[in-house]
Length: 179
Image 1 (cartoon, rainbow, N blue to C red):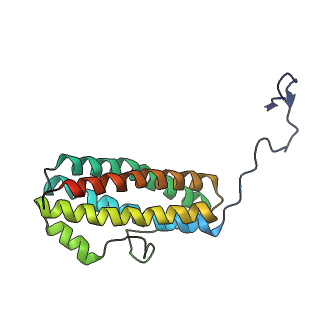
Image 2: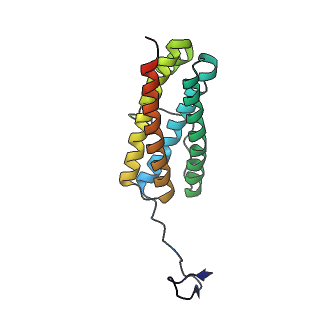
Image 3: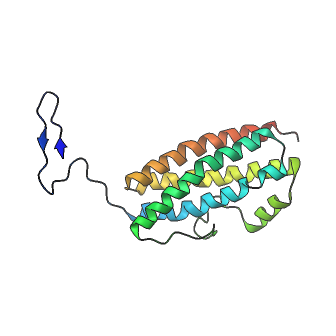
């Protein structure tokens, strides 16, 4: 492998066994907790967005659902692959215990959302998804404070910024809905 020199200096050949570039930060418990909690958290959000097309005609809510699905589907895939690389078991389903206290909807709330249509659905969806996103932002903040793995930190930054923007968007939509 060729190692570039500083500006104006000649390149050199790396020695056998030499590490080139930054040494990755070691994985710590906060990294694993983040992935193991965020996967079921994201799965529940995808379950909620899957209800949108059949229960609303509100274009802004459909756009929110598409945005959530587009962001969270590849994030689940990335975290699943990362946990698998570590030899960790990927959480099944969207169990409430893994992400308790982070805006997860209860079974009763999910059932109410499944039963709702039209304006009632719109309002409930936005309320539940806003709280859900607030929980994800909290999880991402904890990862950024205590995590070290570069991939999980980058993902947490994406979750933090993307979902903060979506929270503001959902609040504006909720305020604009007829009473």
